[in-house]
Image (tube, rainbow, N blue to C red):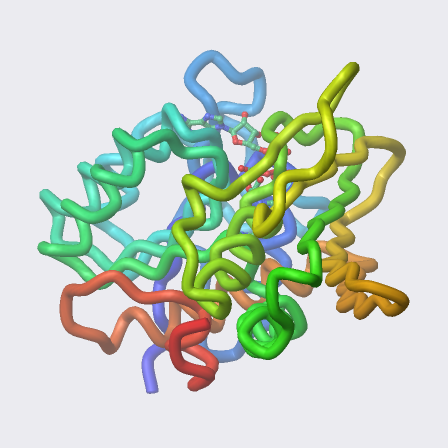
Amino acid sequence: MPEIRIGILGCTGRMGQAVVHAVSENPDAMVAGGTGRPGSPLIGADVGWTAGLEPIDLAITDDPASLFEKADVVIDFTLPEGARRHAALAASAGRPYVVGTTGFGADGEKAIREAAAKAPVVQAANFSLGVNLLLSLVKQAAGALDENFDIEILEMHHRHKVDAPSGTALALGRAAAEGRDIDFDAKTERARDGATGPRAVGTIGFGALRGGDVAGEHSVIFAGPQERVELTHKATDRMIFARGAVKAALWAAKQPPGLYGMGDVLGLGKA
Ligand code: NAD
C-alpha cells in the first residue's frame, strides 16, 4: 500500500517535532513537508534535521496552502490564530485535517465546523489513548454520583503552555457535564481568588498549575461527603500525543467529510 503523505503545520514546535518523529517511525506514512511561523528563523531549514533526525530533503516553509495541496492529510499543532486560517485551507482544498491545537475561541470553533462540512476533520484536545478512555470514565462517574459530589478538575503542564485551563481539562469538564446532564458553560467555575464565598452546588471547578517540563497531568476529583473519587491521567512523554495524531491522520484519510473526535478513531464512540 502506498504511504500516506502527511503535512505537518508547526513542525518547528514541541508537538510538531514529535509528529515528525511519529510519522518517520510509521511504515504507513511519510512526511510531505512542514511549515513554521512566518518570520521564524527555521524557515528554510530541513524538516528532519529540525526535529533532531537525519535530513529528509524537505525545507520548512511558511506557505500552508502549498502543503495542503501536496499532502494527503495535514496535522496541525500551532496556535489558534494560525489554525483558524489552516481550517479554511482544509475546507478549500477538501483535504483531511487533524487539529490538536487548543485554546480556540468561538470563531475558531466555527472555522473548524465549516471545514468539517467540506473535509474530514479530527479535532482532539488530547490524542492519547488513556485520556480518551478517561473521558468515558468521567462521563460515567459524573452520571453515577449526584450533586453531593463536587467536581473539580486539576491539571498541570510545562511552563511554556500558553492557554489555561488546558483543552483536555475543558474536554473532561464537558464529559462530566454530559454525564450529569447539566449545561457546561453555565456551570463552570474557573479561577478562584480572594473572598469567593462558599462553593456553588453543582458546579465544575478548574485549577491549572504550570511549571517545569510536565507533559500533561489531569485529575478529575469527585469530592462527596466522607469520600472522594479521583480519576487521574499522567503523560510522561508527548510522543503519545504525536503517535495518536498520526493514527488519526491515517484514519481521517479514509473518511468522508465530517467532524470527528479521537473516540471515533479509537472506536470508543463519543465521550
Ligand atoms: P510550541 O509553542 O512548542 O509549538 C507551536 C509551534 O507552532 C511553534 O514552533 C510556532 O512557531 C509554530 N507556529 C505558530 N503559528 C504558526 C503558523 N501560523 N504556521 C506555522 N507554524 C506556526 O507548542 P506545543 O507545545 O507544540 O503545542 C502546540 C499546540 O498543541 C498547543 O495549542 C497545545 O495546547 C496543543 N497540544 C495538543 C495536544 C493534543 O494531544 N491535542 C498535546 C500537546 C499540545
